[in-house]
Structures are given as C-alpha cells and as structure tokens.
Length: 367
Image 1: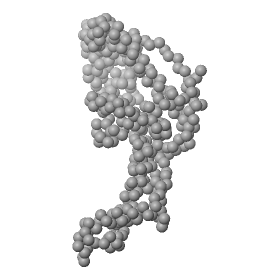
Image 2: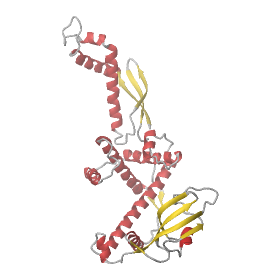
Image 3: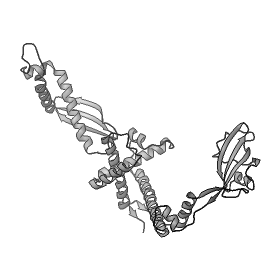
C-alpha cells in the first residue's frame, strides 16, 4: 500500500470544462436557441455543477491511470481518493494505491549458506514405482506383513464395511497377523487415526474385526519390459529420467528454501509496511493463522516490489510458453477469470519467479 499526493492545475480543470461544454452544446436543446447553437457560456452557466463534477472525475481518472501504469501488473485493488482539496490555482488529491511498497534494500550483506547435497537414490524411486504398479492377488493363507486386507470393523454401534488396510508395523496390523479369511477377532490396541470411527472415552480402542479377504502384492520385475509399460525404451532410460526429475525437484526445492530465507532477512531489514487486504486474501491459506498469512503476503509484496524496482521484464516468448502450457492444461486456476485478469495474474507469477532468481543471484555466497 502506498499513499501519494498528486495535483493538477485549476486551468487544466477549466480546459476540461470547456471541452465538455462544447461537446454538450451539440446535444442540448434550450428554449430560445436552436439545437447545437447554444452559446458555450450559456451551457457553462446552466450546467456549471455537472460540468465541473464530470471534468474533475475525468481528470482524476486520467491521473489514476497514469499513476498505476508504473505498477503493472501488480495492481492489487483499485486506487482510493482519501482527500480532495481545491483552490484557485490547483486541485490536490491524496490517494491510496493498492500496490507493492517502495523499498531500498541492500542484498550484499545477506549470505546464502552452502547446502550439502545428498546422493540421488534412483533405486528408492524405482521401488516406489514398483509399489504403485503392483498387482493384488487374493490368497488363501494367514495374514502377513505387506498384505492388503479387506475387513469389517465393528465398534459398539458403529460398523465400517469392506475397509481396506495394508499390514504394516503399527499395533493394529500386528494384532491381525496370523488371521485368515472368514475369521473374527476382538482387538484392543491403539487404533489408526485414519479409521472412520467416532472416539469415546470408554472402550475407545476395542473393536471387532472380521477378515473378508486377503490380497498379496506382486511387484513387477524391474527390467526393460517394466520400463516399456511406463512409456520408456529401456530400464536405463527410465533410471535416467528419474534421476533428472529428482535433480529438478531438488533444485526447485533448494531454490525456494534459499529464497525464503533471503525474504525473511529482507523483511527484518525493511521498514514495516501495511499489507494489502486484497493481497492477503489472494496469498492467504485456510490452514495458516493470521500472523503466518500476513507474513506470506509481505514476502509476496517484497518480491513484487523488487520486480518493479529492478524493472524486471517478461519476454514475449516467456509469456507465450506460459499461455501454451495453460491452454494444454485441463485444470487451471485462471479458467474462471476474464482474459485481462488472467493475463495479469500470469504476469505476476512469472515476474515473482524472476524476482526470486534475481535475489539468489545478488545475495552473497558463502565461501
């Protein structure tokens, strides 16, 4: 949010009044004069209040357009005229702009710590893929770890039918080990939080379990055929792709973490500034408290201020790539917005990303 004072000469107002009066005389019919032939002075006298109000509104609107033009695309909300003072020489306005704050911060003494990177574990990701692509086959034997069991759960007057549960290392799973399909067992252990059951103080951990079916996971063999099923030519190509994805995600996460640390330091250095209620609503999240949401909004406002201060721009090809990507996406947060608003939000996202890059580039590096 920024408070600004702007002014224009009274003569500019008079010029605008003359312009409007000339336009109005073409349409107005006054007794004693033919339409379009009413003298301008008569029009100005007859419609003095209306002409002044409309001229003032037009000049103020033009001033507002000029003011916010320098802050595009970071216009969070419409400008508000707080005070209007008129004198014989000028008209002076006090305006509140819903835009990023002005900043003057030195990045040179902010040091980024080096991060020790862990080795990339492609095998771990491969195991996740095998797990996801496992087949489930019914088996006629006792339950063992890793099985998927389908059970009825009865607790007091509650009953959950045909609930699936993977046997792991929790207490409830251990209580089912060794059971077979068709068996029932009353167990009294700590129940998993995910169970769709009400809790009560009495017998809250006592339930009766009916084993309906036991299914065994059969993981696919890790070979070229497995890779081809996932759309790759070979297992080595799949591994390379996983490695690239892990590296990309790691770099993205590290970049976000480092940029966040820089933003926190910048917030500590910056003079306190008010947060735009509109921006607060835009970046706030339901699971954040008021203080955290306000901090997030301030970080965003700082990024926007840096983008404006450093005159960071967007190349046409960058914008085109974003628009192409959104056009190919089935789901987009911009689908319900008009074209102008959606384009503004897209530009904001691109510039904030580039402002993060600028921060990381300008901040000092640890030796």
